[in-house]
Structures are given as structure tokens and as C-alpha cells.
Length: 147
Image 1 (tube, rainbow, N blue to C red):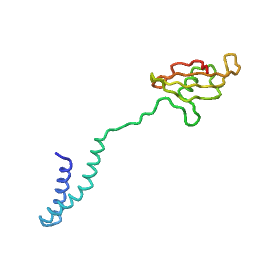
Image 2: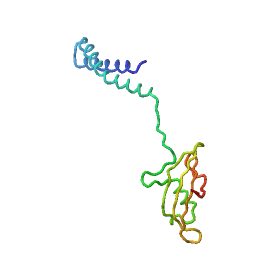
Image 3: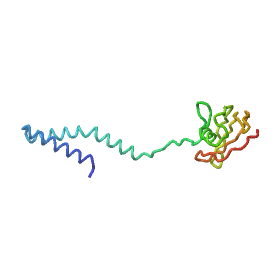
Image 4: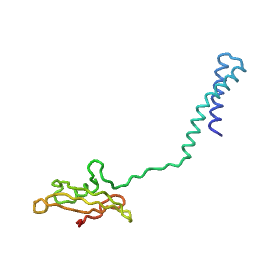
């Protein structure tokens, strides 16, 4: 049974009961209950139809790319996290330059990162590395970048 009809009948029955309790005539109770139930259902029916229209509309989710340059400083957090875990002395890293993230035809991402850091000997060295990240944002490899 339609939800609107059930609610209408329930409101109407409740108002007839209230009318008879306060000694209204049966006609006053029936007509008054009918009128008030109809008025009460008007906003409810428009709300119910809006809900059913919303449910019928397809939901389109905006998908954000898993690998993006930070809008703050251009960095790529997956690469920074990877370097933190895998680089010789990650605390010594000083940013020089990030390239824009490029999505490849295979669905991977490539980004170049130029930075200074301590090498194994303890001296500062400039590194220019290209990072390949998978479609989910996991760093697959790091190679020297040759311009």
C-alpha cells in the first residue's frame, strides 16, 4: 500500500478520534479530520516525492586522482613518504623543485623531484630523480632523471 495513503488514513483516523473525544458532531469530526489530514499531507507528499526523485537520480561521484601535486608547495606526498622510509638520510632532504605529475597511457604517474640531501659519505649532493607511481599511488620505482 502506498505510504502516503497509509499516513493520510492514520492522520484522518486520529483527528476523528480527537473530534469525538471533545464532543464534536460526527460530521464535524469526519470533515474536519479530512480537511486537516489533507492539509497535513500536502507538505509531506511533496517531501516524499522529492525523496523518491532523489533516489531515482543517478549518483555521480567525483573521482580525484590518487597522485596530485600539493597546491601548497607542489610536493607529492607519496614520494615524500617513500623517501622517508627508503632514503639514506631523509632528514637532510632540502627541496629544490617538483615537476607536475603526469599520467601515462598505462595509468601510471610520473613526477620528477630535484632535491639536495646527504649521500652515503655524509656530503651534500643534488639529486634529480624521476618517480613512477602505480595507478593507486604506490611508488613503483625511482630512477635518475636525465634532461
